[in-house]
Image (cartoon, rainbow, N blue to C red; front, side, top):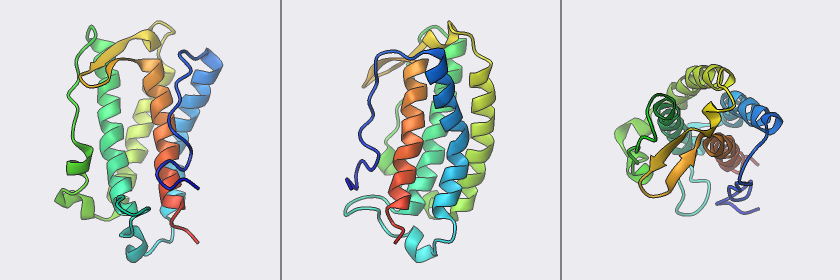
Length: 168
């Protein structure tokens, strides 16, 4: 198993259909439960174990998911309410070592529960045209909402895979 990319690298097919989009939104909806299941029963020692040499700990991964998915939710809302807004990137590696990354994972699991509920309600309300709206990432260029949905469905699988790799 590739410890860095346990579900493979993100692949964007260039566009998605309504059915594929709904499946991706379903994945986003299921992510908090899958992360909860992945960390269930892990000891603090296991949560504080890196999933690969040089990688984050499982605890940091859970907190990173809350950070990253909050940013994505806000970017979605910006794209829906502004004309091609340029978003502010953040240094995820520096965020992952801030003091809040040592909190119990339940804190970020609760964030993911509420955040994903709101995000999915928003996504399910959008029109076909809304999914074509974009934001601009200063390092990655324009990001259409459809691609962002696909990226975050993958992101949930990706990091859940990291946590699961710590299980015997």
